[in-house]
Image (cartoon, rainbow, N blue to C red; front, side):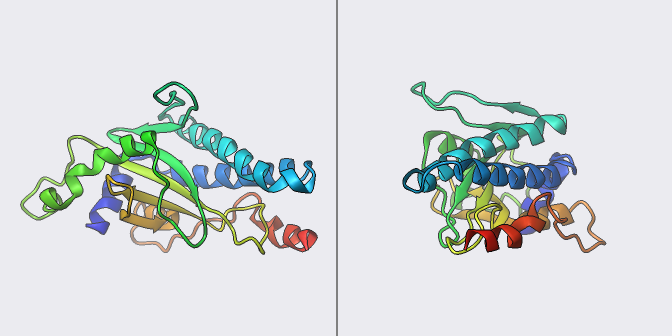
Length: 212
């Protein structure tokens, strides 16, 4: 099913979306790191996570809108915080940052709403992508772009990696969890695709050295 899901995502999402999302998410981490360094040490760690969250939400929307997709920031219910959502045909993309050693998404109402689109992939519907099925979930597909936070001893200016996930409806695991390069490769199946050097990746070692 993994191959089918990758092809399903690639077949409905503009090829430019994923590399642009990686570029903007990397830029968001860099900007958040720079801003957090303006705080005194007691506030610095907490502010970094907060700044990453909001800058990455903005990055996801900008990547979507630049690629001609619908990108919105609806309110949660009850009304309070807002979250980013990008629509590519019947696929809905959200985002989350996760620790390096635990890539299970934190439960939240809006992530559960995105994940609910994947109910057709679960045990009672496990033959969705079998040879006898039409391989087209009519109710859509819920995906999350994951930025993996770096180890605390590494530079905090870029994510350790960027992944694409199709979560279980209960958010306790993944139907698909792959590096974004695997999705990008589906657009060029005869080529070996690597994530290009992102805008700020070259600064990682330099900044890491400065943090020591």
